[in-house]
Length: 200
Image (cartoon, rainbow, N blue to C red; front, top):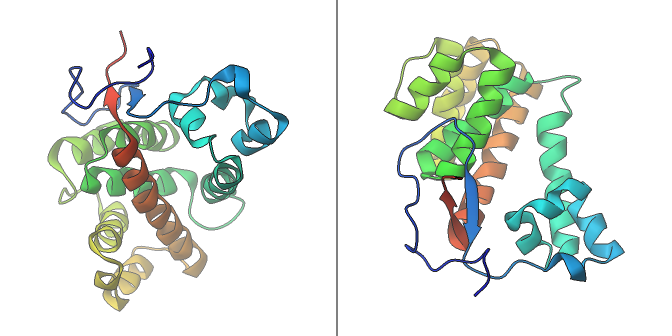
């Protein structure tokens, strides 16, 4: 076992949702940095991700990692039209809060706070859960995320109608669905490969 790999329950992992920056500890061995090839670097997309135990674990399958990372970047960074970045991050944070992924929720809650400047509302979501009242537009986005997270068939025309009534156009609704769907998958992957840790 290396310094980067833990046994489940071998440390005091965070149990409260937070906007603080967390570390993540894998249960499987990440790819050693010395073994990185050009193909691995292409899969990482950003060279800085070689410092992340999570991405270095996923780098064991660099082609899948590359597809995953490009999808992630397109959903969250391609904001020329559609849903504004803060609300894409809100969808991911709400999904992660509902699914119990403390690490992912911390990352996307920080982004939602940063881009929206609504730190207290985001913290309210983390503290009190997905049933909070943080204004109808955000409530509609959270409700849609929860329905899709519970099981996709739970999401229906009533959620689309509510999102439209809250001011989202069709492209924005697709963006909300994409960010939620991506994090339903991402949460499950992260929760099955390791656990969060409080740095320091």
